[in-house]
Length: 308
Image (cartoon, rainbow, N blue to C red; front, side):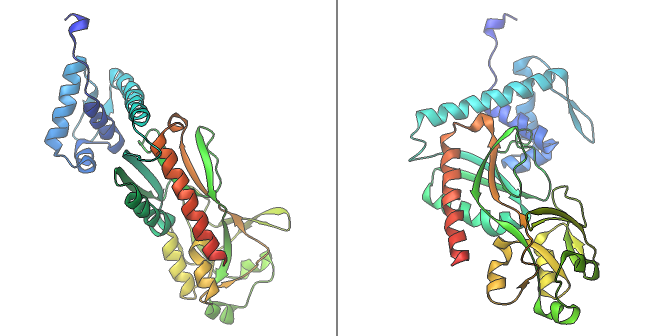
């Protein structure tokens, strides 16, 4: 076939292709896109026919990229990025942002704080389409197709742009009933005699609390009978009087203020600022800029309410 007579792939087919790769299968991709598996399979077949090559090896259990499929994946990411940039440049992106933003965050902070913020953002900008996915693991923004991650903790991703939305820290706290029964620790060594409620999140070592206090870093080994991969579960255990918890002020400030929890070892804390992380390729995206600026204003306002 004459190369000049070839048809070019449709951007929508490239989007379907990337979704299949991200989800690891046709059925999961169809569910994300709101389409039928048969239609997703058809679009992949059309894309392969358009490009005159096989993109995927299919088995009953999994799919795998061919060499041409890997080349197509790289180009699809670039092409769809360029389309998004074009859309931003042709629209008044700052005053009237439109299009889709795929956001991710952690379970607790995402549900309690990011979700309400995005609800307000959607109300202010009705032409924006927002999707929020919550995880307890490290996310590869580019490979998994996310535009933005809201992360609590240290920003340690050199391949991404990070913008601090608001300062924050994790503090040690426990219920009055627990302290009445077991006593209040007066130094870090006292934690050896206490039940500590441990949270396994994002690859952090279970049973090690990294704390700062008195201008020093402290790696404290703790133990306890209860642990979880979900911070809200551990918080409920703390309220039940089951142990000492290391938790973000965003989650416990209101409980501390009314006495349901007590701040202990107040000289020690763990930095846990709230960050917006996004791939460098999106640095000029108008709709992303609007979203990040909105979230920064929103969280700073909420933090002032906590402090007052």
